[in-house]
Length: 191
Image: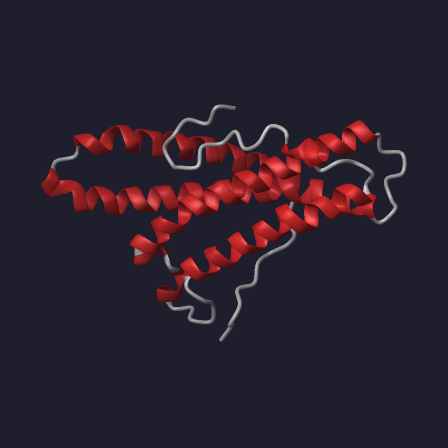
């Protein structure tokens, strides 16, 4: 049995095409979650349990699709910045490096917000915890999400600033705008 969750570190397949498809799915599922938010106050009490059961699955699907879309967009940026930090990409203009760092930070900040919002969903609905689906080799989904939050914290506060410095850019550029995404499901994305 695994005592620590493991996570994929590289996307599979055609990264550009799949990334685009995941981003499209994310937009559609975000709209579905927004519609659930509108419908929630209209659900009669005697039907609330069934509504919440369907709602949690949709919210979870949105969270996982958003996470995958972020992953497919962030990995190529990370990889190019890592190559720069290791002395490659010498002809990459500093302004483009800074823009890549800024976007990478935005994606990781968004993923942190997405992950924080997904945690209570999976804690409330054991159907979403794949541990109960027959594969007991992994920890519970909530434990994996907490571990992911720790990884994201390290990426944002330790790893990313080191990469920025090695690329000759300021990580402060990436901090300027902050996170433009909502931290809760169902709120419109102001982008």
